[in-house]
Amino acid sequence: MSKLRVAVVGTGLIANIKHLPAWTKLQGKGQVELVAICDINAENARKVADKFNVPNVHTDLAQLIAKEKPDIIDICTPPKTHCPLAVLAAEAGCHVMVEKPMAMNLEECDRIINAAKAKNVKIMCGHSDLFYRSFMKGKELLAKGAIGEFRGMRIFLSTPRDYITAKEDHWGNKLPGGVIGETGPHVVYMTLPFIPVIKEVGVFALKMLGEYPWSPYEDYRIELVGEKTACSIACTYTNSEWLCEVQLLGSYGMMTLDLETQAVTVYKRKDLKPTSAAFSQLRQARQLVTETFAVGARYLTGGVDSTHDIMCAEFVKAIQENKPSPVPGEEGRETIRVLNEIVGQLEQKYGKTIDSK
Ligand SMILES: NC(=O)c1ccc[n+]([C@@H]2O[C@H](COP(=O)([O-])OP(=O)(O)OC[C@H]3O[C@@H](n4cnc5c(N)ncnc54)[C@H](O)[C@@H]3O)[C@@H](O)[C@H]2O)c1
Image (cartoon, rainbow, N blue to C red; front, top):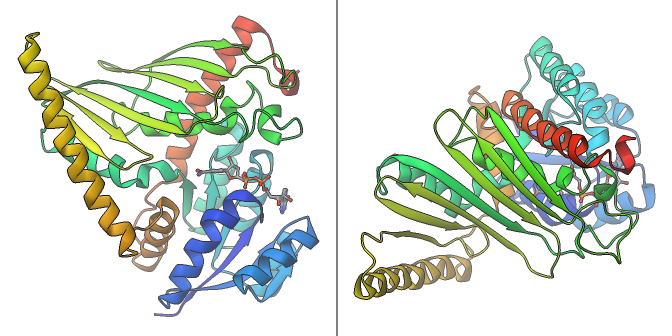
């Protein structure tokens, strides 16, 4: 089978730390050829090309496509550019991987989906957290009945303030609703595998840090309510720590998926006796130790693929085997529908943020 020709657009943070290493890994396995990168910042693009041994550098995607004839365009630029770049790539007959959020609104998502349908190419949304070991394992355990029937969930996401909030000029602070537009897609798309139809949305936001006047809010509390189950979400940008924990509640047990340590623990607390609580805690501690050694051993032997490694590999497989995209445009669209509902409610409650005025 011939190698798929890949080009990456945008050579900033996520391209450097995740996408380019993932494509380089697949190139090493002989599955793809990383043919070009593109960025409006030519100097940065050149530096990144040298770092990853990419032969061709462009500052314009249309020119890149005409010259390099890639099979896959991987879009790693800020959200406002996703739609024009993805439509351009799809109309040129390229398969498209597009980082989250897929686009700014439903109309843009539809334009991408329709362009891809017209040319019979695939869209893969960069919903990378779906590919964490702990997230995939939790989904599998739930499907096997480890905690009974699904009864609801909770997500706690802490992103250090230095990541975006503290940076006055970061585009993430200028999205409608503030920084939730950047990290919000993660918590929404992580809810969808468990609660596929979100019927109601509730939201509260707090402006907590006076030292960042450009940031509209730093703490968001969101409720996503489905037909019979609900998800409570806390997204905070107020401290210096990374934390992402998903808790699943079942009809006879609970499960915690730690997306940072990759540990999954299943636990039950049937009564309020101190001994029961202690045994439950001990069983959880035993699982944490086992999980820590299992994940640690894989890291030490170099056997851990990043979420983006898995995402890129799965996309290549879907193209080669002509199977549906693992995260199709429709899933990206639904994430944007819910995210924009969240932002709409924020604006109704507290007024528009800087960028949506
Ligand atoms: N999946 C994840 O975990 C994750 C993590 C971080 C960022 N992201 C997403 O990745 C995307 C990029 O984020 P980032 O943090 O790397 O941004 P960044 O600002 O670090 O980099 C963006 C790059 O795109 C370039 N660019 C802008 N417009 C362009 C255009 N029209 N054509 C070509 N290049 C252009 C910029 O010059 C810059 O080099 C965003 O959508 C973000 O939400 C995803």
